[in-house]
Amino acid sequence: MFFNYKKFSFLKTFFINIPSFKYLILLSIIIIFIILILEIIYIVFYNKQSITNYFKFLAFFIFWIIIPIISIQFLNTFNHLLISIVSIWVFDTMAYIMGVLAGKRPLAKDISPKKSIEGLLYGAFLTYIIFVIYFSFIEKRTDLYWIVAISPFLATIGDLLESKFKREIGVKDTGNILPGHGGMLDRLDSIIFAIPFIVILNIIVIIF
Image 1 (cartoon, rainbow, N blue to C red):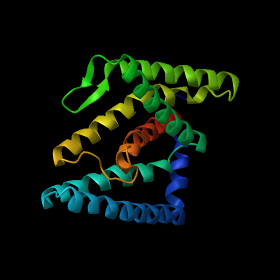
Image 2 (cartoon, rainbow, N blue to C red; image 1 turned 60 degrees about the horizontal axis):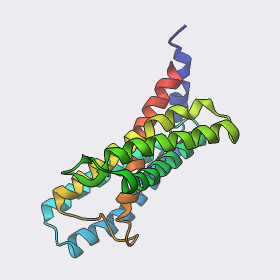
Image 3 (cartoon, helix red, strand yellow; image 1 turned 180 degrees about the vertical axis):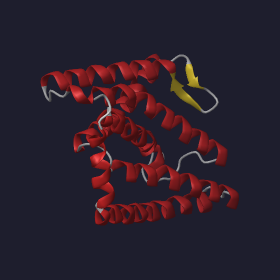
């Protein structure tokens, strides 16, 4: 049978495991509260933003963090999560290097002037090559190729969305925890945007 209802069993296990779900929600709330307080202090007191922008940031931050954290538990294995994170970080690094070396055409000039089409394409290509080598000689896993294939594009969309948000509220960096590297969201925006979509595709793969 093409559609197997038994493959929904992992969802049943997730929702029956109430203690695990409660702890995950509690952890999400704690993480959100701590980071949110630090970011709000920076935006309100150091960037002198209005109360309207404060609430924009609050709504954005809750949506941007809590959904990915909850989504993580739906990933099929720890390898899916690890490959998702590592492939995005590798792509970010490759895209930055290639953007500096060969970037000519801006990807979204009004949102993020430093991002280039060349950086995206060359960065994605080099990321694929790196993981093809890794999956061929170190860890033979053909079932994880699809994550590497979509991660660069999801990561880029996440970067652009967060850049758009920062421009809307007039913040250069969403924090100052990592000097010279932007705020916490600047380091995580690619990952936290990509994870829910990877989870959705992973569920589709499991079902079909």
